[in-house]
Length: 186
Ligand SMILES: CC(C)(COP(=O)(O)OP(=O)(O)OC[C@H]1O[C@@H](n2cnc3c(N)ncnc32)[C@H](O)[C@@H]1OP(=O)(O)O)[C@@H](O)C(=O)NCCC(=O)NCCS
View 1 (cartoon, rainbow, N blue to C red):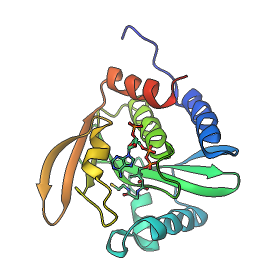
View 2 (cartoon, rainbow, N blue to C red):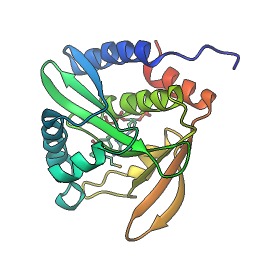
View 3 (cartoon, rainbow, N blue to C red):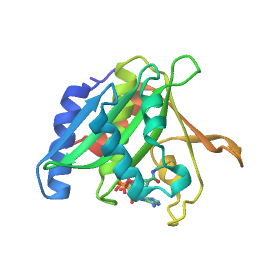
């Protein structure tokens, strides 16, 4: 590597400043590795607002997912109010991280992309070599999700009418640094 990779710790500080400016208030980003009761409630409430009913996880499903190896959840707080999350865990494929769910109450202000940049950096720092996810082409609000994830470099690896669109990002250091520069750089 002919460049210095930023640390997640430093990236979190940048992300808080960047989102604070974009959202107009003090932002804090917390990283959790277990799903405490309050975390289940936070994720559940954001999912209730952002996902149609069949895509929402129940409290039990969230708790079960949080027990998966490598469980990691980022929450963005605007002031005291939780406004966004992303969480995932180890994929059955060795070296892969499965990014399971992400949503923000405040859209089109950079929250989603900042969380993706942080998650990729976290994954690289923790030895993962790729990130996977399942999404859909178009959601009920007309969001073009495959297009959205493609802008971060995720590529479609499979389509199954029952499961959805499978996407994958290879975590080359250059690719992760490019996301950092684009979404968290000066
Ligand atoms: C998808 C989601 C997380 C995006 O978060 P966001 O904070 O609005 O995204 P950002 O503001 O960071 O936008 C990042 C980029 O994507 C673009 N973008 C945002 N929403 C988009 C959409 N619906 N379709 C296409 N592009 C979109 C932005 O213009 C921006 O472009 P840029 O990188 O050129 O500046 C958010 O819309 C959301 O919570 N949706 C509901 C839940 C959901 O669908 N989660 C994903 C499940 S797989």
